[in-house]
Amino acid sequence: MTDLFDFLIIFFIVAIISYLPVAGPYFKLFNTMIHESGHAFAAVLTGGRVTSVSLFRNTGGLTITRHRGWGGKVVTLLAGYPAASAISAVYIFALTQQWYDYLALGLGALLIYNLLFWVRNVLGWLWGLSVCGALYFIYTNQYENWFEYSIAIIGAVLLIQAFISCWIIFMLSIKANGQAGDASALAEVTKVPAPFWGFFFLFQGTFFFGCGVFILAGYDPGSIMEFLWLF
Image (cartoon, rainbow, N blue to C red; front, side):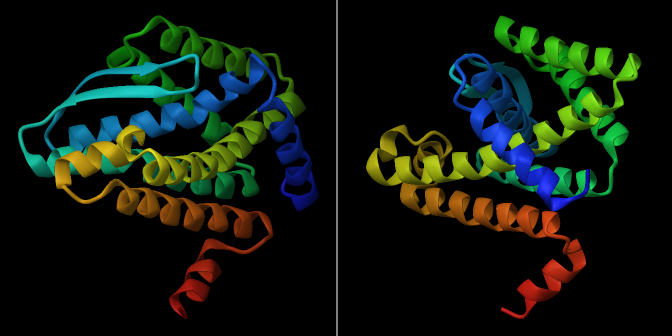
């Protein structure tokens, strides 16, 4: 499934799924989970503590953390969007290498870790368990094609939703900067206006989305970095 045409078909399928009443929010929660995990891991790495992670029906999420210092709080607030964007590009690269088993193991490990230590709301638990259960069922029953397409669809969702969410936070930071999620929180903590953070999230999101698209087009990450280095 390394052919660009195959991925275009998958992207088309994902675009349709995104507008379906139940399936759309269900798949969008993959991006939310990566985003909130980015906040959580950043908190732990900067000496903070994760109180809870929640996933919501409207595809939103909330990570509550505790910090001893100002710097750790800023890094934690910054981490969500870049984590989702970077992971989506890495995921796409792994797909082009056909590392389906490794992607499933990594995704399963992240979900299980979240469920055991961080997720505290019912919907988050039900969603995480359903994903693990579905992938386990498909894999153990040797539905190889279904397994590969499921992993690929998740990758397409991550790439597309990471990019779209960055656009949304950017627009919110301009039009309603008091309700711009992480951008508003960063503005409150750093006293730097929310539109600045909205633009930062959009910039990095566009960068990683572009990397993912170039990788799908057949360019290796090394050549992409060499091209960017020219600028």
